[in-house]
Length: 444
Image (tube, rainbow, N blue to C red; front, side, top):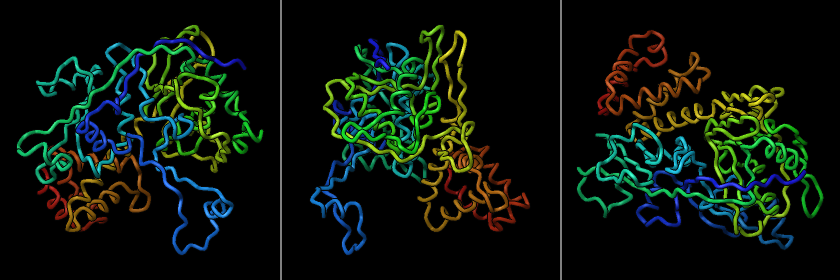
């Protein structure tokens, strides 16, 4: 099929890592570890004393030098030669409003055990929550504003990252990281918001063959003709897509001469509205810039995994279904004037579940004296079905109550104090009253 290149000017936003000063880079790395180019490469070594004939050992004995890639994979990059600086969110106005997508992308790299509880704002988005931002901040500045939450018994570890910058512990510490908003014109753009481009991609990608061997790239997955069937795989929830399909696509598109790709975010409930073939409205789309990038180093791929499926289209109990897709719902218009429009729901809700549970776990582990471990066991018991199966949604709700109490929420504290009055709670934790009181003594 003819390549669906388009000429378009897009409004784009990113964290310009290459332009940040040392303090700004340290702030990004503190709040979002992994949101950078990684740790480089090294020559692979066989573990000392190992007698197992691993692929690495076989390759080395055959005269090959095996290189380990320690960098974080990047979705649709194709290989390690494309840097983080190539990625942008697609904005809806000149100010840089992307509906909060950049914050969702960054959140995927956050580690609560390091950063703890903090508030983050994007000054380019329309949000009334921006009102309490520090007065000295230029209202016209495009920036991320990260404000660590200083709890009475759990001071933010952000100060430890800048020991020479803040001497007075009474001073509130705020990190401001500049953003870059720009309008860029692409002559050979692959835009997956457009229905015809999507059809071209699924037809060509799923039938792709290797350049040197002629073997099919997806021997087990098979060919597809419907973009919505390949969409779950493009949204593989692993950081950088650990299953490899988007890396194949990135390498292939770069070799075709594509200047950029607009693709749906794996961290958002992406949607697009089409009217009579024209793009009207969208949310949750990123862009990777391929202009002037080197020729991909990887020539051939063999992907042995099968295509992902959303729950509504999964076939049989043996189909691979990532946890992040458990509530995913896809609504698509296949005919009429709105044909090509679709809306994905349920991805962001699961991300919130992960965030709530991880944050509570991080603070519980800082409590020491066995208290944190006991509280975590108690939390899992509260979220379980009579101590057997743990429901992730319920565990997230329990985690949220503990965190709200920790930051001083009176209603959450009262909810916790009522628990010992419930017979079923006492049956799973006879000493829960003392446990809860020990916890409340740590709360703000």
